[in-house]
Length: 91
Image (spheres, rainbow, N blue to C red):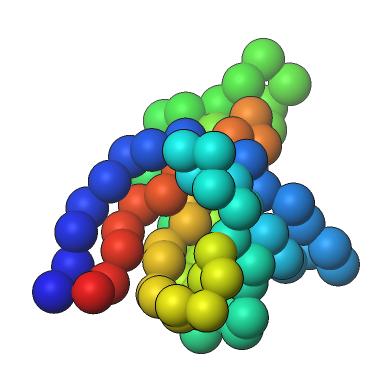
């Protein structure tokens, strides 16, 4: 079962990949990256004043745990602002 969220998370990145994230005060360690993809939305319409494309988002589906229990989480990074959200959690 999947649950959809939109919670902001603080993510630590090493070599361009998430290695840790904090959600609601709890720290999760990324055990492995299951999937990674980049999506753009209406890139032909959305550009910043410098002409750069807006709306690019990176998605990371990871196995992570705050301790001994491991779960699957989908993290989303808005590339232009470097803000992260927790998009989904699999039970």
